Length: 351
Ligand SMILES: [Fe+2]
Image (cartoon, rainbow, N blue to C red; front, side, top):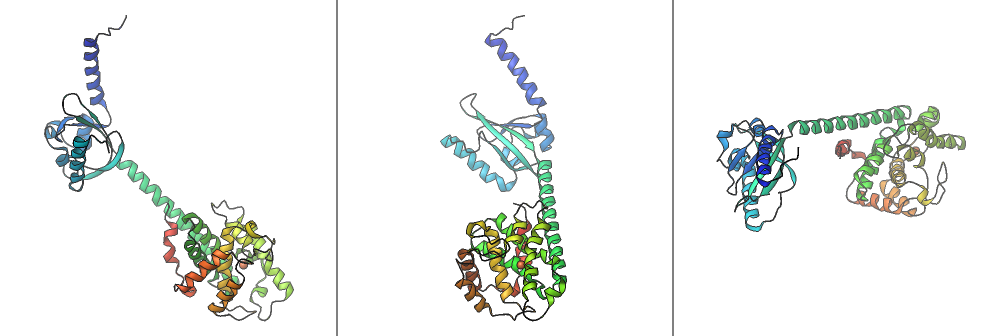
């Protein structure tokens, strides 16, 4: 049978369907007049806000459904639209705090449209209670935080394992991690890069686990064969870390932290941009901490001497920007022996 398309019939059908649509909608639908008064309130809105229809019709939206701290902004927004016609919120989906009967608040997603059936506009708001979604998002953030914290604690534990075998370098990797991350921050690297540098530096000497402990702790001048044994720690560290799917170049940092820009470093003799920026920064921090710490085969030198030595080789062995950032840090009072991992707690907060 042909459908009757006359305006009168279509109008009747639309009103009925529209009413059904509004009454059965899962979203709260609240209609407000140009004076901010509620003129329609569907069953879902009754459920969300905890008011019966008769309790809110004719009442101000701002008094009934908006918590006190949001009322001024609501009134201002309505006034602004009525005087300028500028749609700041209208037609967009926004999240804000709404208020139930009894005064408790909840996060809501709201989309407002304006229609003009007569002289004055009428506003229809589609409202969704997103408490569950917000709670779920918060749980995910907490979960991600826990995973990161556990990762950091695991790497600290691994870092300590290496240092138990090599007591002369106790705390070395932690100090290098702190200094390298601080240099990277001065250089303006992204949070993610700083994070990778910090974690990579924390275990950059993990390969020393493969170096016989009598070589690590033997006093006196380092013999040639001992030096070449020491050098294998870069490759060993890389072998240990490569299978781990880190989102940062942790294995490469372990492999490249003794490379020099002019190719005179080890183990691969990489040059210039072949060396990762992360590894160049860890290299600087490693050199400063190593030079200023006592080792069984040589005494410590002063910080000033270490920085002078770095400067002398900036651009030739060491990344010039990283050296400058390192010197700037110490000039501003950075103390390598006061490195406090707690200060870097921001590292474990997910972005
Ligand atoms: Fe090393």
